[in-house]
Length: 169
Figure 1 (cartoon, rainbow, N blue to C red):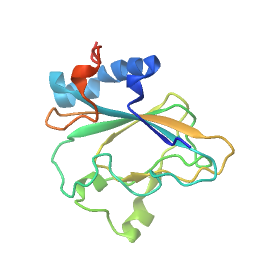
Figure 2 (cartoon, one colour):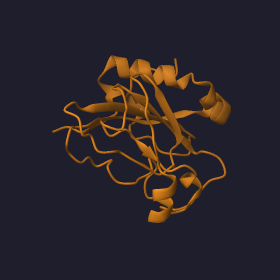
Figure 3 (tube, rainbow, N blue to C red):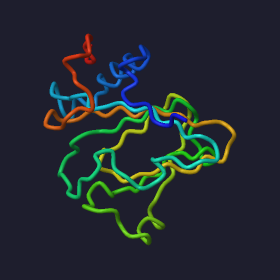
Figure 4 (cartoon, rainbow, N blue to C red):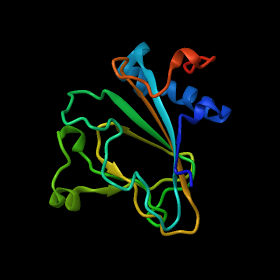
């Protein structure tokens, strides 16, 4: 069962178009200017009544136990399905992008927020923000596409010289 689709823009034209739309978001220009770089795009499928590798607290820049004064990258999550509590919408831990490690369970219990939104909505967050997938208790898969743009210092999940098209057009 496929639950994560790595870099769907390499195979699906609508995902190429999505990266181009996201590349034009004013927040990317504000943070990174002409240096905004596509780092990765992943399709996330949260199946009904099952766990997912995204069902644990994580960052989209994994294995980093330090913080930065400004965002190194942004995770821009497009809701392909409606996101609600029943279908396991994303749970974020506000302020955790400034913590070098995952905060305590008490902190999580007190501050965790579940994000809800309708199809085509965007969730934009610092890629260092701790977040997790909720449990999908419905009979329908919840689908989202996470597109990450950031500083050129970070390595992309793909080889850009082999694309054959310009993602920033």
